[in-house]
Length: 121
Image (cartoon, rainbow, N blue to C red):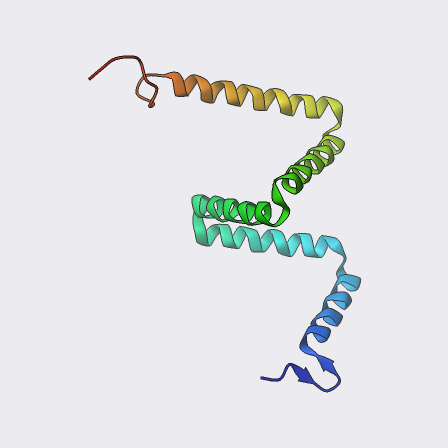
């Protein structure tokens, strides 16, 4: 099938329409429709399916960027979050994460959670 209609390709027409929509509605419009689309997809997949999709996307992105590029992306994200929260907010977030890690370690050490206790069968 030919992608041309008149003097404009389908790609060019889409770009023109997107530019026009962005001019009329702004970035908040795209954030809102993205949020709605994400919620709809989460409803289709369920929480676990949506998490699996996110992990798949993260792995693909890591492959694209390589380990150094992926690390840089994480560093930039951390800096942006620090700017959003401010120094105290970022410190609180770190403490919250530390408590969560400690809780997971504590749970992992409880008998019956796969931790070897030294007993032989």
